[in-house]
Length: 309
Image (cartoon, one colour):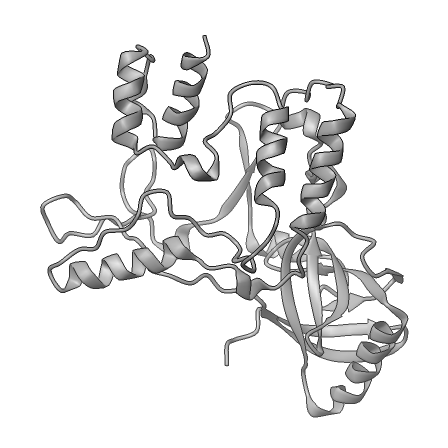
């Protein structure tokens, strides 16, 4: 069992349900630390005064926030922050119910499992879970969690309730905020028909077991091998991808779609993948600038562009 990240009350109308929130996700795989090369000395971060360079004890550290004036900050004492917390900061009050799936994945920040706090909370907990499950609705509320207030969705998942914190509307960027506009391109009927047919031929049911953290597994193997004084090798270009059933008839569709599109084309399945050394040699022949700093994918793209000049 793990420790809850929040303990409070969920209000289902006027019915209080004591609850605990538990993190629904956990990172796996080796944690990479920093060392000084040639030594066994860990590199660690300490809290230091940027003016004096001296370490500051935890009890002498307070938080502050930047004002509208550049390089001007105000200090916030813990009791001042506590004073402005919303009334009932240990309470989530459901204010309405929206249709299941009404909130898109862009809005989700973090998800927690919700557990009854005490045995007496099990009955109203199960009542809410069953009502949401049968009506295919999701409860909306707000929660103060880790010094931050967030919208939250209460929904049934895997036989229990979950609470998913959301971003606020002004925190969700539009594409125009972060990327150049995508040029408008007139799509040919043939290319669009091929693309739709390819999508249909590759349709499958979502199953997370089809995905494998190949990099994480190789990193774990490398750590174990190095601990025994050895190392490992792996095929360049390996990456995690869904495992599809054998005998799929989409190879021809992919080749047809590739041929129908203008511009440089990646090698087909039967053409193989060139190694980074081969690509570097070809990039040298084509005098591709910056080739020594490129990875394999960047080299492949640069060589393709240069070869089509």
